[in-house]
Length: 392
Image 1: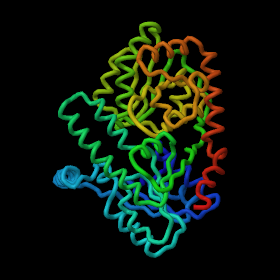
Image 2 (image 1 turned 180 degrees about the vertical axis):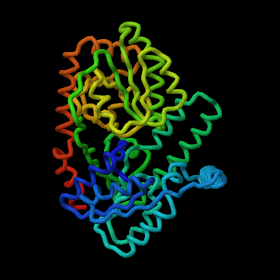
Image 3 (image 1 turned 30 degrees about the vertical axis):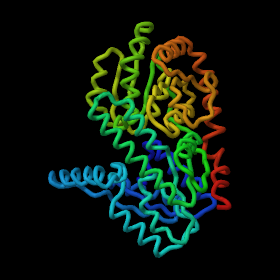
Image 4 (image 1 turned 135 degrees about the horizontal axis):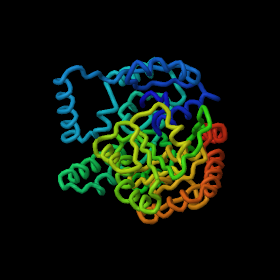
């Protein structure tokens, strides 16, 4: 896993708050990757909850030739050894050595691996209960990438990637004593294709997002939050800007849409030419942008796992319009805690209705916050997380 603090992504939310909850009853040691010196400074935060924090750096690419060689090696392992690119990109010899050395000289009751691509380290777990935590049924996401791809050549590559990823991921889960999931929907997907020995579903725990000051809501404003390096976020933004935003703007000319997230490419920046659309790029804190928005939109069409961006918005009492994909793994009711619309016309109509009715936005936002408090606030569900690890 990567260093889970500061919290920038959904996986950071899951990892950090799981560590925080488990530290109430257990001694926790963490071994993870770091990408920069900034992470080193934040080790002190993790040490509040961890007995030990052991970090390994991702390999540093210093020259053009190293970059070329890495790419050649990556594609060779993918094409001829059938190792998914995500496994190659997120593992290293340095962290493998640290895991091997640490587990050989220390005894643990439980050793948990996060994400299927780190399953290769299972061989170093000798006399402990082994758990792998699945954040999502990732091969199902890769399948969706393949289905949505229009370019014939890219579609063929996506299909091969799906086959390779599915094969590797399903084999990975079979190596462990237990497989933990954060979404019952993902458990059903995996069990459809694989017979697992022992499984449990643990809730996603999060802190409520808070702002340092109160922000006044900007009328007729919408926001989307998500890193643009993720294909499912790019697809959601492109779908919204091309198919939904023009319908909303034809009814409400003063509407605005802010896209908040790192690494926006030219395909996303192009939308800033449209009236009312802003792309922020990477920001340190997304909460001011979410706080000021009248509506939070998440028109996701691709992806598996629980979307923590939705939970963040719920904790901030936002009126949310999303899709069936956006609420995967959540026990929400359409029209109660948020709104679910899967086609562009229905999505646009729902947004228009809410933009014109601020009181309805307040009511639905309060219901969303109540749901978050009960089902996902770390202090509320800490006991159920601890229960999942008892008696293994």
